[in-house]
Amino acid sequence: MSAKEKSPPKMDQIKSFLSGGAAGVSSVLVGHPFDTLKVRLQTSNQYKGLADCFKQTIAKEGIRGLYKGITSPLLGVTPMFAVSFWGYDLGKQLVYWSTPKRTSLDLTYTEFALAGAFSAIPTTLITTPMERVKVMLQTQDTAGGSGKKYKGMFDAGMGVFREGGLASLYRGTIATLVRDIPGSAAYFVAYEICYRNLKPKDGPASMGAVLFSGGMAGVAMWSIAIPPDVIKSRQQAAPAGTYKGFMDCATKIILKEGPSALFKGLGPALLRAFPANAAGFLGREAALVVMHSMW
Image 1 (cartoon, rainbow, N blue to C red):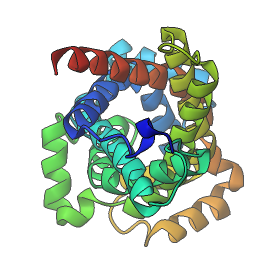
Image 2: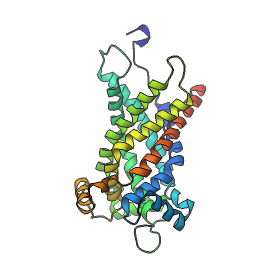
Image 3: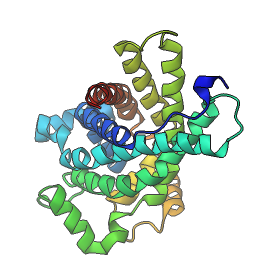
Image 4: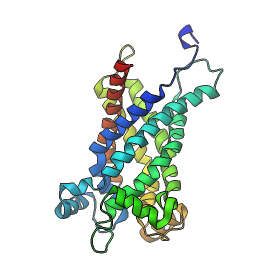
């Protein structure tokens, strides 16, 4: 290694955490309507497709219906993204730590993927209960019965906890890990591939490069994440005792509805993936610019 490459780049944990939080806020504001449609398609058979789901939601609930449950992801996705990006940067540090005799500080794409996969493990601690509450709020108007069961995020969270304690809040943890470990690997490595090919050799990347790379990261993740995401949504929306676990839920879905049911919500997920994650990475870069100017 050259003189400038004697030691790996140091991780600024505060900047990593806060910039990830900014990514989360940006992503939710842009992507939540698509997420609502995805969850409703995954958990109900009353819609003919994406367009029908959109029409029925608007007709019955108005535009506000698309933003049902947004408080939960805003409060949950912000720390979730913060932990995800922090976990990714920590994962890169672990790669350096585990390869002390490396001849270059440039990580390979495989190493970026490993760091991304690692980031999913700590992130799941926040993701699972947040998405459990979000799914309950997004589907309560389509679950049958009279009236709304929950008034909002905190009411839903307390209600879920009263029904089954922490185990109820963390229902779907295995499905979340099955979705997010390979999904996060694809997410971060896709960003690094696009960003490094679009970034000039001398000078910073353009806003367009950040937006495109972030959007493609989202598309890469959701191209492989939908089947476990469907299973997770079904587990989290169903009454207690409906499924014994991840494999039981997957088996019942396939036997009852066929393998294609595991790809419900792919359309809105991919439609959401590009703009939401483009906004997320742009929000992260903007936050880093501000923080770099401050310290």
